[in-house]
Image (cartoon, rainbow, N blue to C red; front, side, top):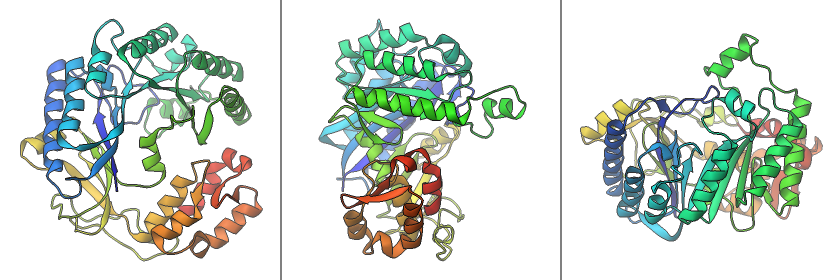
Length: 416
């Protein structure tokens, strides 16, 4: 079965106050080049392992951080390395994330990315209004977004995503309507719209605790979601995942791998992977509890051990760029730790990830994958959520109702 490939670039000009991603500000060109060297070495090591060797890679996602902070030549070196070490599908979707303030609209960075194989650009736009961007700590403005979109088209990107956010401090429903309408006018093929989540440990989290950060009321946030959804659908965009809309034929194929709980390999510091091991992975790290059957529908406990063939693992790389590079300089894969994903946990993840898709979880696919039906495993929970008007069976799939779409957390927590 084809796999997805995620490549992490951890560098940013400035770390935003709401961000809890593995990103680091203050790197110089030499540090970035050394990091790319390490990435290429990790690609070499994985390319020889049986989980990857000969497997087709259907999607690539270069995320961050801010991948477009790299020099154009370094970004192209990453993309060429992927093609050199992995067997990409002829129609592979190859996404590069970018910040409108770092795409080098007058230079050759985007042209080099396209020449090296990138097919899709995802720009972190967030909002149109300057005061909201400044409050988020973003380094760009609306004019830079417009210039970046024009530069992407000149470079040859025909597939363009714009990331938007709602529920921001000081944001009104009118602000979000204006942002969505403006974004549609830029002619993207895909739009993601996420509500702001206050993550523990971030500056926004501490500001909330101290009473210095005030978010819109829930009613206003729901209004933003519903009005944004209506604008996008009226413009011909398909709402296919809770936070994602696409023109026909332009759904994000890489993210569909995550939502369908399929296999992927993560490269770079802190990157996560989900694979069935075909050979021992001796540096997986010490045993530790994971997302196991003991936490999913009352199954038996499972602990990880050094990676064993035949088992499915979710594992992750060393988080700090320096530690990641040091491991690769020693010639070992930079895996920090992982967890066994046993059958019961895999079923649970398939449900709570798949229910993010508006198509839902296919009953036929679930039974073909696990040998039991959704009703066999989750009957009482499904019946309760259907009575509450949150789930429905339609076209052979279990999916969210319109009410469930607004109250998704109540649905997903039933399967965790």
